[in-house]
Each structure stands twice: as C-alpha cells, then as structure tokens.
Length: 133
Image (tube, rainbow, N blue to C red):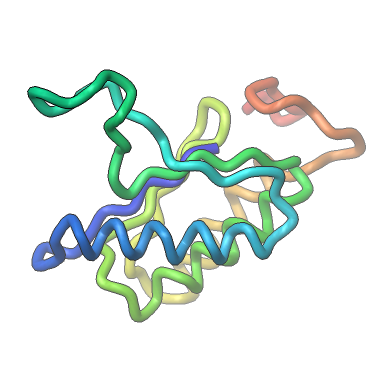
C-alpha cells in the first residue's frame, strides 16, 4: 500500500516532509509490518542515484486485517492538518480522502474497506477477492 500526502496550496516542502514524518510515527503505532519512505527515480542534477526520496509518499506493508485501522487513522489524521488530500493505493485500487463531510468520508472509507477487507482467508495484496475487485 502507498499513501501520498498532498499539501494545502500554501504549504511548503519542509512542512510536507514534517507531516510525512508525523504520519509515519502514527502508522507505526498500528498493527502494520513496515512504513518506509518511497525512493524516486527523479533525482536532482548532481545527486547520487537512489538518494532522492519522494516527499509525502509512504509505502506501508500490512495484512488485510490492518487495512481498516490504517484507513480510519488517515481519515481522522488529516483533520486539522494542512493537507489538500491523502491518496491511498492498495493493490490495483485507490481512494482519495479529502476534506468532505464526516458522513461522506465515512461512507467512502466503509465502501473501500468492504471491497478490500479480509474475507474468510488472508489474500496476498494484489489478488482479487470474491468481489472481483
């Protein structure tokens, strides 16, 4: 799973980096295996290959059982933070959390969890479940 933070129009790269560090610390409190910064292929001139980190992007290794907790954390975490949206990619699907009404946000997250949550057995990430997703 990857999570991408998109800062508010008036936020800067330092603020986005600080928010990413805060989110990583909060995610590590959940039942996830790993949370790591994502490296990017686009490196500035003069830098070493592999040195660049994509700001605002985290890769999360988790079991399908932990999906609900991660999405609920993201849903509440972005409240009162200078973010435009949080994009989550899980397997072949994605969801974008924005500052919608709490009811709309909850319905969106519930539908995503229902589609991707654990069924009777744990499925490897990327394989379709009984819903065909």
